[in-house]
Image 1 (cartoon, rainbow, N blue to C red):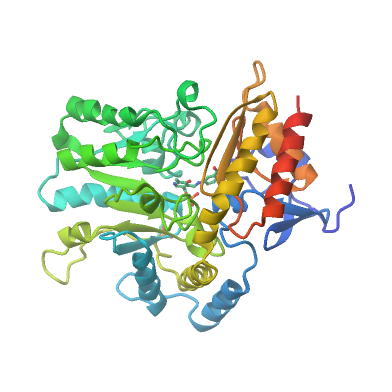
Image 2: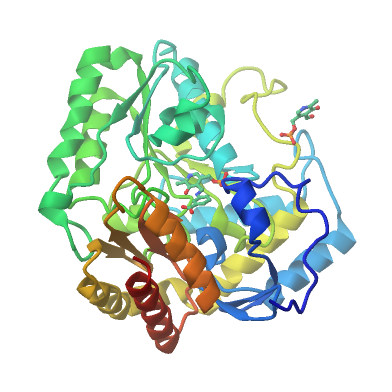
Length: 441
Ligand code: PXG
Ligand code: PLP
């Protein structure tokens, strides 16, 4: 293979995250630039972005407005502490975010990633109960097949076995709801599946087991992204909400993937008509141009902390880079691009076409399920005998050879392109995935 750009000499020093390092370093998949819907690979080929990077480049790559905002910010105020001081863009961005979040989730705490947003939300939940004199509420409830990043809190409430088993005992006082994937009843569902709302009732059992007075919060992804696009059954989230209300438990939606238009609405909370007590977000917040995450908390949660002497810090939590000026600038520009281009409405408009195309992949014999919602789709292949995940891995490599970036988890191919994708590009992506699925054995 001839390379338009040289492959770095030293591939050993970078310990790559969530990657089989030895395989990658034998056959590196390196991208050197990106614009709109495409990356360029080191060997100079255009690569259609079928995954918006890692579900994060919602407005497409290299948006000039964001580049300009970052440049100007770096030239004006390289850094300002957010502990005891602040930069104006932080307030502006928090205000813009709170105009997008459902009421009353109008208090915004900034982090630098989704993982930090999750750990922040879990800490706020525990501290909130304590601030109200309810300090026995420390238990956190997650869900099987949930992904909540890689902090100790996030992996403890997360439900991915591989992310947990290597790290010992994790947080204690955690329990998990069952996942909502019911392939026998719901396979090839379009949008929200019919069956499974009753799985939320397991929360009643868990709460009774531990006693409601010990439970602080329930955290779920409204749509589970990382573990293969698990769309919530109709009525499921409503039931979780009502059980949480019944027992005074906070409900946290992890909207790191589902936020900022991915489902055709501001947040999944809007799409499903259920308002949690906190939402975590990241990724699309800055169109991924600068790392940033956030927690949106209800006004009641914020107010519960605003007691005591006024010179005393109310929440002992924060990151050096919370509300970094450059991230705030990128966030403001990204939100402006979404608004001006009506990009979330565009997702809603494309959803029908996307759904029809994605489901056309059902013809291939090894495809055992297809799921979709918003501008997200998952194509699940049967595992090869004795080699779970191998087929998916080969599919990812073959797709890159053919000119597309896709995500795989196990034997599931997940697609989540930028919202600027055209119908022709949807056709191209789906045709390429069809060829990939047909060509691997
Ligand atoms: N919560 C959710 C719901 C996520 O999807 C995180 C938290 C953690 O965010 P950070 O910014 O710390 O990575 C995520 C991240 C994939 C994939 O391929 C998904 C994520 C990250 C990387 C890959 O499914 N989600
Ligand atoms: N470790 C040390 C030694 C530190 O001084 C700090 C912050 O001051 C941290 C970790 C936390 O870093 P950050 O605020 O970037 O999360």
